[in-house]
Length: 241
Image (cartoon, rainbow, N blue to C red; front, side, top):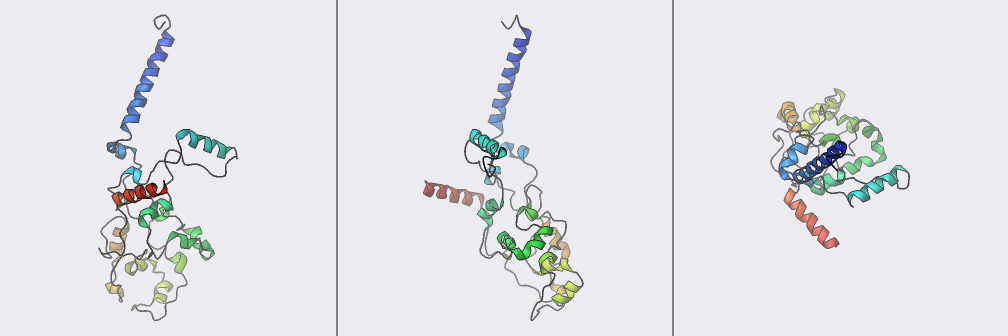
């Protein structure tokens, strides 16, 4: 039949080629060696050793169920979208490894109404506003003057530094904040009391771009390693069952 019908022959060969390509893709892409090819870009500082599935975990349900759920959402039969293929990487994913009780600026704090004007300028309710992944850096913001959005009217009683905060604020020297203050408050270090003894702005900028940590190599809490996270997740799933 294939000899009599050239069109049918081409369709048959095309189908075989398509199946072969599909099998190759299905076999190769899940491999560890394929992660660099699939990645949107280099991982950020501190995440270099993580595998893709540390963050991009499988979405709930099979592909058909996910597709049905999203079709239902499109036609108004469902209130929310369903993750397709992999789960969305959001704050919950970040906090599974980075949550700690001593965070000075936890994302949930900025959900308070008093911060509505600040988050209209910089949405710090989302981790990725500063730490968007696959950018080979520590934060993606262009400068370190974001403190102005909340602390523009700061008043410090018994100000310990030689150039008072009110003067720094009046002169709009917002780039000096991180020269003393660790944003998330996790480093163990002694805060300088003289401007000349603070961390240089050059070192801060290099740090934000993924460079050496100028605050301290000692931290109150360490993020979970990939192995620790996977073991914790496995233990949780076992208990849940």
